[in-house]
Image 1: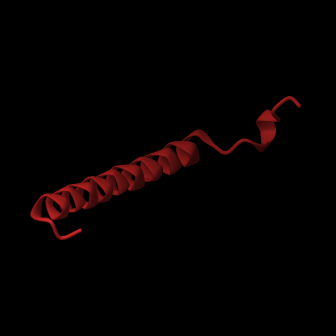
Image 2: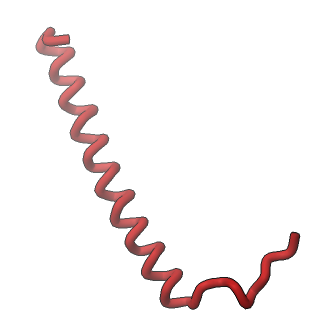
Image 3: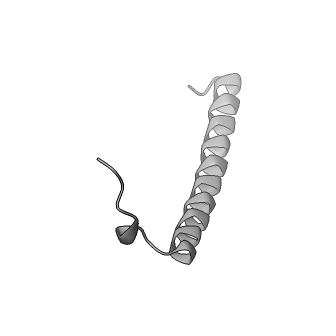
Length: 48
């Protein structure tokens, strides 16, 4: 099972895909961090 180089996407396509994935990952991390902070505050306030 050796990778076929001719079928690999071009360098620019790969870089743009990686860049968009990194942006989504950063956004997801922010959302998770905010949700965790809210959950922690709710627990401290005794809402949960």
